[in-house]
Length: 120
Image (tube, rainbow, N blue to C red; front, side, top):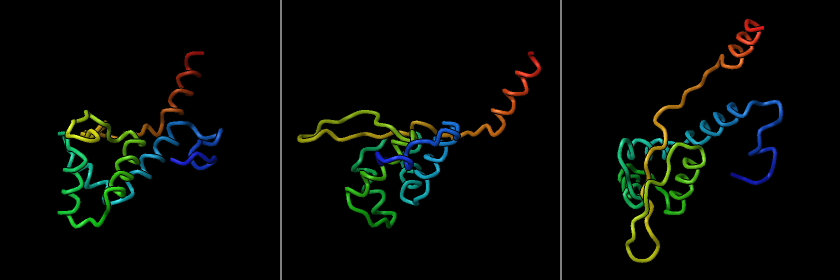
């Protein structure tokens, strides 16, 4: 995410959950990221395994491109680092899904207002 407002900071009149949902949608807008999610599935996959899978699926990307996609999915709370594996040099990241569902309660704010009025 960038550091410059208003791009990555929610406007004051926008509920934080809406902004969080927007960030999830942004993270899911690329085919490559959907392939990453599909491949990780219910298991754990290393960065190298994900990279090789994407190449087999016809994705044309560099390792730095993959790191960018993984970073965006991580920032959106969709994937997370499960562990690190030491293989000489820098440790390799092992990824897993952090969430399998994205749920939006469209009426949450209205229901809270309604229950507050009833309780008065």
